[in-house]
Length: 60
Image 1: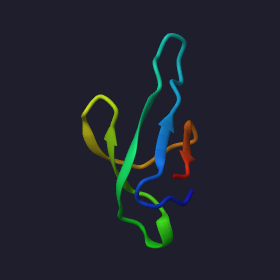
Image 2: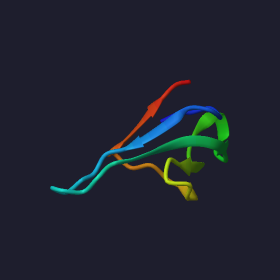
Image 3: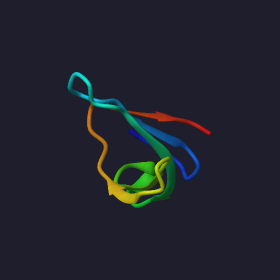
Image 4: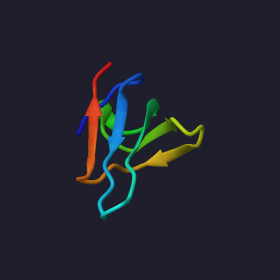
């Protein structure tokens, strides 16, 4: 998984009834665009994310 600043991270809910989350990648801490990422989620929360298999990068 590779990303650049400005790409969107979509994390799908992995249980029935769980809502997915999305946000903008504001920092990339791994080499060559690899995780971890600092993500500003649409709800205003910002956090360090190590995306799992339920995550998708949407290029800007």
